[in-house]
Image 1 (cartoon, rainbow, N blue to C red):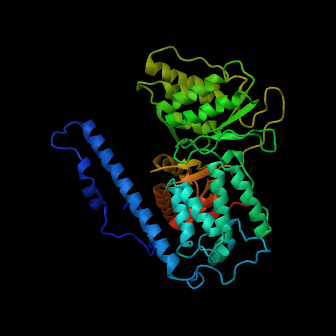
Image 2 (image 1 turned 180 degrees about the horizontal axis):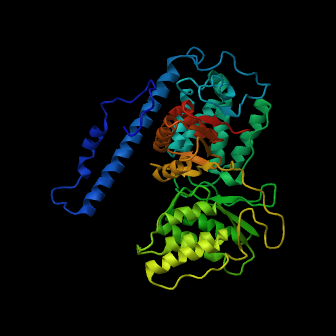
Image 3 (image 1 turned 30 degrees about the horizontal axis):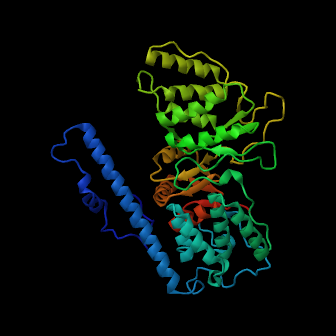
Length: 462
């Protein structure tokens, strides 16, 4: 298997090895007439995709089956997974900010050393991770009134609130928030335009441009780790918002990789704000964007598209790094045998986050990401090679690895497995890992996978 569940009782049947998976995908291997290197690579790619899909299905099915079996096997208290007494309804639910490795007192009275959450919460977390939000919502709605959940009930409410948030269902969110406040006599989470409204099946990040939230800075569109042609929908949303607003924001803090098609889409975004207009584009994460664009270009290698070069140069304009721009423009000149682009400022309608606006107003407040943290944002779908490669580079010279999950909306099951493996490797290398404030659906998936047994998870404060 690509990853194990680290000695968990429900470890998958070892007989279902990678060799068995390869046997099941034999139809995708090259036939006798396939003698070109390109065809062999394509056949290998198809085989790997089939293996990944089968492994994901096997793992998810095993966890769901185990959750269903545990749900009917015994009362939670008898299994030792829930405290003997639930918190009284008149008391605020206990939500410690951190669930630490080996900590026996989990958040909201959950014993995080137990083998799993209640079956219904595991099922909901897995359904959501696999892009099935409506069945997940149905399971969570039924769980709200399940007295047998005892101390787990607040988690069910918070998971459902986060699910409504992710789906952009504000009316349902606000109605449930009122019920939450009455039930637990505690303030519920607040609605965030930054974290709502994008399709779960899309690859293009988690946030849509939203309205201002209690301050002068408007909500940012957060772009995903892998920037490809699918971000066109996000760019279109920003351009529509720019027609009616004085300021829009684009956040590239999660950017780890970009292809030529994605670079071309982002160039369209930047070029729009070089024209006379009333709206300003505020850019977050320009350094990450520059690094991602630089990763697809090479001096002397003449690619079919110049978009990667142009995006890397544009990022340097936004950063105001003239010398680096001129050095890269010379490399571009050598590669394509053309005149090098000349330095020009990004323009008064494109501004780096944190800089004072041209009209002299105070700079906008900094984003809530932990300073110096590695950011996981948007929807992590499939194998997360680009994100893990960036995480390894971030962790190379650090002993304490801080992963900011505030803008992470969803993580597919197979991606969570890759993350589990990576955390185990980091721990094996003597590094400590902290995940900062994932939403409660992602948090529940981390418990299902056992990530909390290898890393600290700092819970989000209500």
